[in-house]
Structure formats: C-alpha cells, structure tokens
Image 1 (cartoon, rainbow, N blue to C red):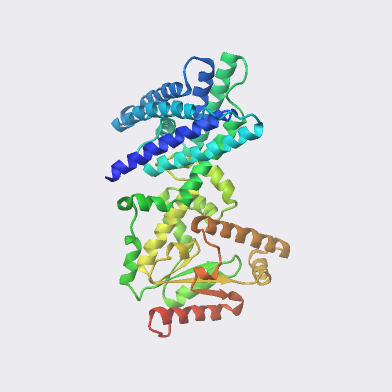
Image 2 (tube, one colour):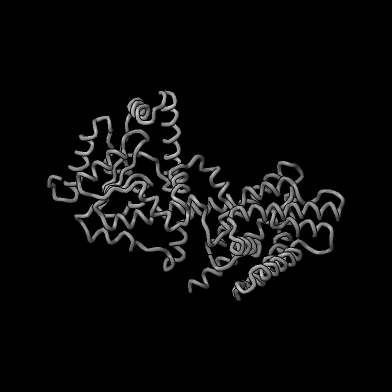
Amino acid sequence: MEKLKRYIIFLIGLFINSLGVSLITKADLGTSPISSIPYVLSLNFPFTLGQFTIIFSLLLIGIQLAILRRNFKFEHLLQIPISVLFGYFIDLTMALLFFVKPQTYAASLLYLLVGCIILGFGVYTEVLADVAMLPGESFVRAVSSTWKTEFGSTKVAFDVSLTVIAVLISFVTAHRLNGVREGTVIAALLVGFIARLFGRKLAFLTAVLFPSGSPGTDSISAGSQHPNRPVIVIGRQYGSGGHDIGKALAEKLGFDFYDSEIIQMAAGSTGYTPKFIQEREENMTNSFLYDLISQMYVYSDTKEAPRDEIFESESEVILRLADKGNCVILGRCADYVLRDHPNCLKVYLHASEDYRAKRIMTAENLSEADARQKIHKMDRRRSDNYHYYTHRIWGHSGNYDLTINTEMGTDAVQDIIRRTLGILFYAGSEL
C-alpha cells in the first residue's frame, strides 16, 4: 500500500514538474537547463518540446547504459515510461497554458519565478516519493558513482554543459541565440534552492505520509531505562568558558566529556576527515548562501550536502552517547537533538561581551578589537547554524533547563549545575 502511495505521489510530482517547465518556457526568458536542448531543438525543427524531451531522455538513458554497463539495473529501465509520460505531460501543460503570453518584461519575470516555484515543488514531491529519478538526475548519479566524482559538482557541470550545447545548437541552426536566456540561469539557481527549502519546511510530511518508513524513537528510548545515568548538554557563547567549565564538571562528577571526540566519531561514519568536519560544524556563515550552494544535492538519493551529513552524523553520535548516559556533551545543537530524552539536563552558558573579550584576549593573544570581532563572528555563525537546523532561537531560555552567567565564577556555575542535577535525577542528594 505504501509503495502504491509513493508512486501516486511521484506521478503527481511528475505532472507538477512538467507544469513548472512549461510555465518557465512560456515566460519566454529561456527555460531550465535540463530542458534547454529540447527547447532549442523544438524552436528549429517540427517536433514539440515534449517530443524532443522524450528523445533526449532516451539518449541519456542509453548513455547511462554505456557508463554503468553491468551496474545498469533492470529498475533503471523504469526511466523509459517515466520519460515518455513526462514528455506528454509537458505538451499537455504547454497546451493548458495557452493563455500565458507575457507582454512586458516584468510579466515574463513574474511567470518565470512562479514557474521556478512550481518546478521546485515538483522536484521536492519526486524526492519525497523516493521511488525513481528522471533521466537527467539519474545520469548525474551514474557519472558520479562510476568516476567517484562529487555529486554536487557533477550536477553543476552537467547543467552548464547542457546550457552551452543548447547555445551552440541555437547558433548552428538559427544563426542566433534563441531559447537560452537569463531565465535559464535564474532557473538553474532557484529550482534546486526552492526544492531544498520545501524539503526543510515540509520535513514532517515524510512521517505523516509514510509512517512505517520513518525512523522511530528507539535510539532515545533506552535513556528511560537508566534514570540515574543522566546526560548534561552545554550550549555556550564564544569566550564564555563553556569548554573549561564542562570539562571540569565532568571530572568532578566522574562523567565522560565529549567535545572534539564527537568529531572523531562522526568522521568514521561520514568518510570525511576530522579536519574537514571541524571546519564545517557549527560554522554556518550564511544560511541563504548555503542553501543556494547545496541545492544540487536535492537531486541525489545517495548523498547529502556535506554540512547536512555532518550534522546528522554528529546527531546520531550524540544520541548513542546519551543512551549510555553519565556524560557531558558540548555544543552541536545537542539540546535540540536530545529534546525528547528523559534524562537530559540542558544548560546554556553566557557572559557579557566585556568579560568574554578579556578571556579571549588572554587565551588567544588578541587585541581587544580583534577579540570583539571574533566574538561577533563566532556567535553569529553558531546562531545561524543552530537556527538553520533547529528552527529555534539560539540562547533562548525556553530551550534550556538552566541559563547561567559564567561571570559568577567557574566554581559557582559548576555548583549550580551539580545541585540541579542532584535535584532532578538523584532525589536531591549532594553530588
């Protein structure tokens, strides 16, 4: 029953996809990169955009067969009926949109943007169904898996290549540029970005539509079996002394302390080096640019954007550590990852900028101006990273059990945390 539901959703997504392609094309500012070659050909030969789409898709399937050889699976042949259906859907939606005839550049731009949104939602719907891929994306996967290239870069190279070939075909057949314009570039930048946004905002739909295929809560349920093995998670402002306080607290309690150790554990499951992970974790420079750069991964069913993969891997590590309990975990959105864990004490440490600047000046041998600049940069990156992955406000008191000003002193902060831990998990006993 679930398989049938997935195929129905995929077919709906396929139709939405074709509607988006047609509206972008009708905007008369070019079309999406994957449709650029069929569109240019349709302008110069007596076949429709849908018919050329079918022909081009079959060509891509044939090239996949040549690339994959023995690795070309029988299920890949499913792309053939999908391609035929997609081509007919494009011709159908082109006919349905007969009234779209923009008379001004502003109208063309509006239709283009609406088309990108529709196409982005169609891509998201196909990814949500998770049963098949269109030949274009499957071709990129074949190249990436055969020659071990990075999926995102391969997708970019593929889109650029299609656009360049379409330009060459236009000059050869019509002796002028026709069918490839600024809309092609805009679609290339926006469609995957929009699909990725839909994926993030509508992530809950996977569990709603496919409950049997959604991950359960087994990974955190074990915590309820160990009421006397709590875990303390500490979020902290840069320069507030969170690392030193967390480590000293763990030593006094006889708990394990995890900070950079999580990087080592995540490296084993992602295949990335510890240095690669360290440079990217909790280091979101700009969420909009990150989504724009990482948009190509929305088409991949085997690989996520590196930063997303790192976050998920570290979250899995945190869940495993929390199940064992008796540990202190620093940062990495652990308060959110363990939001449903029954034995978790969530702490946020903060301090005034003056106090933090003095600590950083001493610890890192920086001038006051440089120390303050680094505080602003690191806090902004941690805040953006936290909000991106949790949709919460970093440092908001409602996300934690305790928020403590570290200017009170290391011993006082540790004492508050230990007393709270004793009250919550050890029937008020002294720790």
